[in-house]
Image 1 (tube, one colour):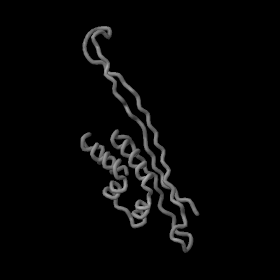
Image 2: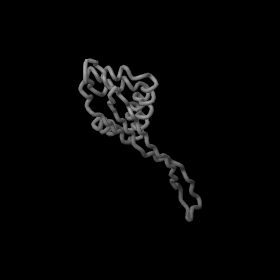
Image 3: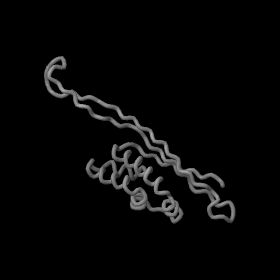
Length: 137
């Protein structure tokens, strides 16, 4: 994930916005286009519900658009404990931290604040952490 975000964050803002919008509009397609998944991972992605895909696309696309860190914590899938193929629940846990601060920029001339107009600007900070957890059934 770090390599992909570094590559994307090197893009000019208009191109980054195109990528962020693609991620927001179709999370599954974006992920399959940008990562080489094992057959098991492809299956996991295919089984992701539509509402979960929309949610993950929205929060990760927002972070991408604002060039904020996206952290993926993903352990190796545990070996099967028996004859069942899926004897673990896969849990996707997200932690989405945001802070949006309004900053004022002074423009114009004058002294003592006379003749100046303040223009408001937002500064966005935060981190998205996506953690994959395997729990025994």
